[in-house]
Image (cartoon, rainbow, N blue to C red; front, side):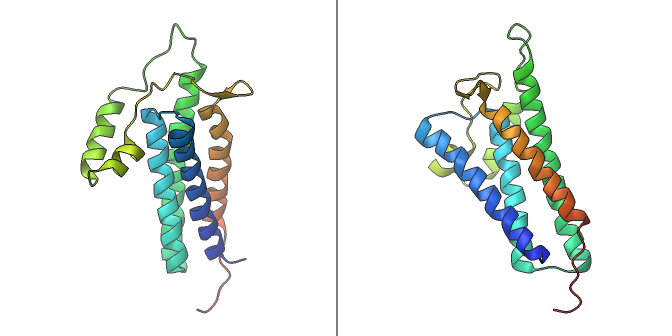
Length: 169
């Protein structure tokens, strides 16, 4: 199997994850916290890099650059997910905020985007990171997503080290 197919899988997987997040926000009514929004940004980055790599069908150094960008995006996503699960694991009396200035960073990012209802819907946070308003089998959304992000990162790291055996074209 060529690496190009893997890049398409990464793009479609991130699209599915992003679509699931929007479903839970718009249909179920769960408001994302700042860390959830940063997770969405990381998934968008990974998905876009995967899509561009699929369309470009790179070889050699370009393939390594795309793979490295995917691993960096995966590290960012894994870092956000780890922080979120850690915050949820703290006792309620020791619970702290999402992090110093997370809302400020998010507002600065949103200002750079085209303004409108879509931008506000996708990237505006309205919940606290330690708030568990929805659970499944006793696990919150970040705790359910965490193993998926770990597996995605392992897949991206494997993709980085995978050799594409194409000689021509």
